[in-house]
Image 1: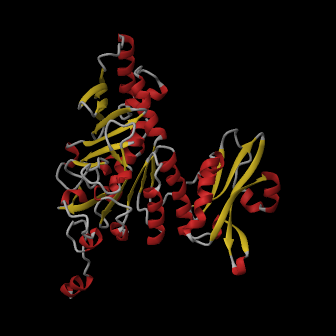
Image 2: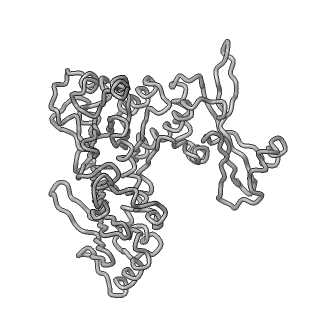
Image 3: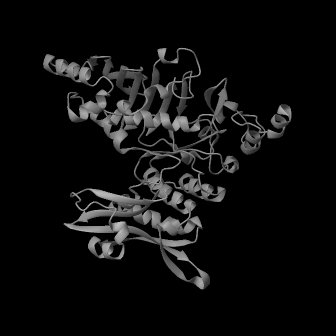
Amino acid sequence: MLLRLVIQNFLSFDDVMQFDMFPNMKRTSLSNHVYTKDTDVPLLKQAAVYGQNGAGKSNLVKALEFIKSFALDKNFLKSIELDKFFYRLKENYMETPICLAIEFSHGGKYYFYEMEIGNKSVIREALSETFPKSGQIELVYERKKGKVEYADKVEVDDVIRSATEVLLKKNPLSSLLSLNREFPILQDPRATAAYRWFNGNLEIIGVHTLLPTLIEILRKDTQMMEFARRLIAGLEVGVQDFNLTDEDFEQWAQKHIQLASMFPVNLEKGQHLALHADNTPVLSINIENGIKKVYQLIFDNIGKNGFIGHLDARAQSDGTLRALTLLPALYMASRQRKTVMVDEINFCLSPTMVKGIVSFFAHTEDTNGQLIFTTHDTQLLDEKDVLRSDEVWFIDKKEGASVLYCHNDFKEHHTISMMRGYNEGRYGAIRFVNLMDTHEKKQ
């Protein structure tokens, strides 16, 4: 699970900023929102991040995406315009490296992963094991440019050291963590554990993410499918249920000649293809037991006098499909011990739907993961049985740079309305727009 995220000189963040999931243990409300069992440090199960448009909420999400991509993909930095990720509202902005760090727990251990990225090289990358109870830190490896220092208790011979330096020289923009996946030069199992957390326990849902592989995810995970089916009727979008149907590709192609022509003739075993319409996963084609099949979601929509119509994804609203995307994310956070970050959870959704989704996670007692989301939905701030004070964060802009802080810093009495305080500007992170004044001044 996520403990903290540290950001400096990245997009709209200039000075060092920290976002964390540490609770204020003096607060007794919603104690079930704090994980204390089987953990050395108490952690919050959820967090909501508020701020005006342009304040930097999405950049917080992008920082997490950047770290994950760097850790997993050796070609990540080569595939992006790296200079666009520096904080650019100052002179000589590229003289200061991008600095990102993340602390997380996995398999009963705690890790701190750090990176310093220059314009043309990885200046520093380090992975450490942390011990929250004692405050100690034990190095797993530290890479400074082309040189690597290893943990004291791990014996590394000269051949491995030399091979590592050659590998980094050939791949100066790759993380050692990603290279180690292809060339296991780090014998320390903690490096493998850290990679697995990024790969399997951190999920990020962007504003326009509609999970192109949604059909495949639901097809392969029957428990997730049943979870989504149980909840979809409660979203009150006119859908009673939905199912995944399959059909032989040849039979389907005879009825949909134009659509079928869009797919290649040959499909390798294990490969799947998705057809999208308006960013919606309409169809998925896969080989099952040697037979090419077409899979699609069919929804049971409620009509007049209780009539049930069976409609495909293209007949559903954007809000229904966005909600359907969030249900697997909700399952991952509540049942699979994953940390899930959702950017603009209210995108395409009504306030009541957002409340319903967040309330479900907040009130479910046996959750084992984390749900973190950015939002503009201020109504949630007054839901005292949904959000704790230390679960509410704000991002504001000061002189062009994002500033990050928690509502818990304000030390307000629990009876004071957070929504009213936010709307009145007591916490910052909000702007009062008056276009008329601007218009009149220019006339």
